[in-house]
Every structure is written in structure tokens, then in C-alpha cells.
Image (tube, rainbow, N blue to C red):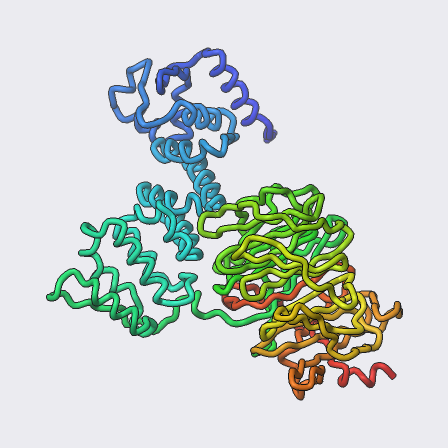
Length: 581
């Protein structure tokens, strides 16, 4: 007979743990920070080479009944002993690093590896520099690389953190040598190094020649080179730069159209969204944080993307995070400081170094300002009149002001004067407003009733209808800016006709019309070529949910590629004429 009791190992461990708890048959006591831990040498030696060597190699501890363990905290020892006797690892988030250090010393590999992975998964702007220093001290190459990669993804922002200035030269140089630094120019990378030097000018200026070898000469501006030469610590010293002709990853961005669709907990979960490159006709996908409801997206001049609104997890429970920033290198969204007022939806815009979140609260009236440099929200003057939650808002920026458009009225907020004022309402109040700024004016339309497009002139506070546009039955429409021109993309389909607004089934045949605005004649005309401008990802515009299109420079190699783009292609109106017959 050959029979195995599968539960026997667990039973034995369970009984040994009960013996430990009652201090029965224990043969050693570990003294840690004044607390005594009765243990069994055999159990300790079985999970830790540190203890196996201590108890089997003729050391004095072999005969000692009580052994003092240094450089390990009481909590960490209790956690590791619980693991040794149960196989289960449990610890509070703020104790993970302490447990990790103890596991490294005691050579408990499973605990160390799990703690290290946890730390890698929890890297953020507040801890990644300290984690790099910690990993460097431990010699943990995997955690080192994870920390460096995270810092590389936010090198400009990270260099403003006080902890970054504490890096040693040996820790800074590998960072500045990386190809995957997300920085829009080599000059910005030079400024990162100069900021580090300035923190301790007298001591660190001698390291300028060593740091210059990290800077790629081909991409440094003439003015920046002059500044570097002026800071040379000695006239006898010659600054030598890197001759690498490889651009940093952050300098390889391509302007793309990004379509983000609002979801609710009761619809399909979408963990990614399409990014379309009009210059090549290629499609990519960007990961998303969670399903979203009432979201808003803003893009900064440096192509940083922020998302605000109410987020849901897969179980349809509300997330604790309502504000995210996109990480280009990691193709992921990272939570940032939550807004002061909890919002189910809001409009988010960027202007002059700050982000503004307006509306979305119970009264649809509050407004807040976010400072990316310190990850902090502050309240600003509320809107002069509340807008009901049933009304959709859109917001655009022009000069130093933010303009709010809704079917209950239009307003502007001066960021210079920190005050609101009532502006002229649109001639036809929009139920689903969408607007863009173009050549000093605002162009707005109602996506639910595309009979007209209006132009707002802030100089004389007037709205002007740009001719009557009466489309055939359509699914959705969106105003887009591309290469300095204004376009209107209209999505059609074979579906039930409901006024001018059609909500087709997914199986409906879709086609599009693209119109380019002609400023001289104030009219919309079809351009000669539309294939590379009009996105083929039109299914994201034909669902009964809000969809926004933003334009930003994205890094192709960091995005995902669909296995096939065939399912994303859609014929133009001309190409689809035959199928309509």
C-alpha cells in the first residue's frame, strides 16, 4: 500500500504552531526588543539558512537557551515567525519595509521576495526615490531597476522632490544615462542635473564634468551649452558630452487622437481606449485606470494627461480615487491627491500651470485648482449660479480665462482676477455641448442635435451661427483640431431614425463624413483626402455614453498594439454608397 495524507503537512505545522503558542517543547527563546519568542530550533532552521547555520555550525548559540537578535524589530520578527509556523504572510502596509529588511537578514526568501514585489507594485512619486536608496543599500537589483524606471517616467517632476536632491552622484548618473527618460528635451534633463548641483553648490559643482558625460550633445540647445560652459568649475576643465545620437524616449512622441468613453458600472468593462495616429493610419491602445462615470480629461502643453471623475472597480463599487495622471512610460494611470469636494462628475481643464475642476458636486457649483508641482488642490470662487446635475457642461480655455457652456447658461472665470462673470448664452442652448478653441474664438455644437455650429467671439461677447448644417441621420459627431485646422467628424450608420440623432446597434454599418472649417467663407467643406485625418475607431463614438477626443503626443513603443486593425476600419460616405442601395 502507498497512500499519502495530503493534509498531513498542514496539520503538523498547525500543531507545531499551537505548541509554540503554549511554549511547549520549545528549545530556544529569541529576544527581540525586549520581547521573548519561544521557538523550536528545527522549525527556524527549516525556513531560514541564517538559523540553520547558527544552530549547526558550532557557534556559541548552539548551546544558548536564549538568543538576542539585533537589527530586527519586534513586529518584523513576529511576522516572520508566524510565516515560519503557518506558511501565511500577513503584515500591515506600513510594516512591509521593516519585514523586508528582517527577511533579508534572516534569509527567509519567500517573505523577502513577496515584500519586494509589494514595494515595486506600490511605487509612487512620494516613495520611489527613497525606495531606490533602500534597494541600493540592500543590493536588490530588481527593486533598483523598478525604482529607476519609475523615476525615469517622471524625471522632471521627481527632480523637484526634496528626496531627489539627496541622491548621491553614483545614484544620479545611471538615471541620467537612461534612454527611457520621459522628458521632452535634452535641455530639461540638463536642468535636472543643474538643480541637483545647486542644492549643494560648493560640494557638487566638481561633479559637473562627470554629469556632462550623461548629456547627449546632439540634442542640447546652443543656449544650454553656453550655460553649462559658464558653470564649469575650472578654466582648465573641458566639458565632454555623450556622443549618443539616440533620442530619449520622451522625445519620440507622436501626435495622436485619444478617444475616451464614459462607462457606468452596468456596462461592459473597458480597460483600454484607442489612440489613433493620423499620420500613419495606425491604431494603438492606452490602458485605463477603471471604468469611469462622469469623467473629464485634460492635456497639458507637455502632453501630461489627467483624468478626473467618479471611478468604479470591476465589482461596481466606487473607488476611493477620483483623480489620476497618466504615466507614458508605464502605460498606466496613477492616483493623485483627491479633490476637496467629492465629485460624481466635473469638467477638467488646464491653464497656465494649473488644472481646474469645475462642477460635479451636489450643487454643481464648486470649483477647485490643482497644482501639479505639489500635488495639492485648493478651492477657488464657486460658479455664480448652480447648474443642475441633469445639465451637461463643457469647458474650454482661451487666453487667461475658462469658459463654461451649458443649456442653463454660459460663464467665464478669469484666473488672473479669480472671479466669474456671466457671458452671452448660445443662440440655441445645447443639451450635449462640445467645444474647442480655434484662432482666438470658441466653436461649440450640440452633439444631440447637430443642426448648427456656433462661434463665440470673446472680444464682443457674441455667438454667431456658422451656417445651417442639416446632416442626414447620424450617430454622433465631434469637433477636432488637427495640424492647425478645425474639423467636424460625423458618424453615420444604418439604424433607427430619431430626429437627427441615431443610436444604432453595434452591428450597424458605420461610415463617416469629415468636414474642414473654411474661415474665409465660414463654411464646412469636405477635404480632398480624409483617410488619414478621420479616425477609423468610430465605434467609440456611437454608444449612448459621453465620448471625448483629446490630442496629445504619445509614445508608440509604450502603447499596446491591437492584433489586427481590421475591426476598427470604417468606410467613408463615398466608399459606402454601394452598400446603401
